[in-house]
Image 1 (cartoon, rainbow, N blue to C red):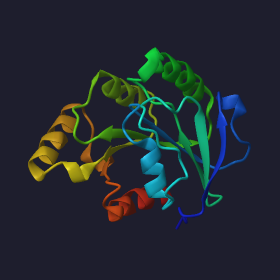
Image 2: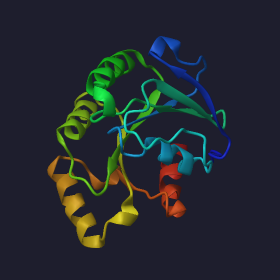
Image 3: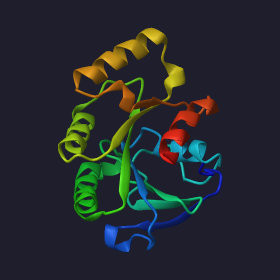
Length: 190
């Protein structure tokens, strides 16, 4: 089993060619700019300030690499969608991810983070379709599951299935319910 508490920030890279050297498999995290990728990293690794969390969406603009127990890299990608100050996150995400997906050789799984309170939007569907078409291994990780009830979760599951996603590829987490991360840790340990 991987010790997720033994995680350290390695570096920020503007492109794949600047990524850290080494042969660790990579787990890529993608999602809207305000979905809570940094909070997820902190909760997954049982560290409060490992990844910087900001109240302003669009803070991550580089590929951020975290070494997990000398077994894998968590790679936090820039968000897509909204950012204050007119910064074009979609353009940044598109350019950086095109390079990453075209050249990465150690990618094992892509975690697509989604807010469980929100419907899938066009950007979410586009990234899921891209991953399916290009045969990347992926999981949908719905954050903030503590904020929805069973009826809303059922509706969300129906929406997911309508986009051709198997519920076996879905994980629900909440930073307020640490045990929800056990499923994600187990999945990544595989």
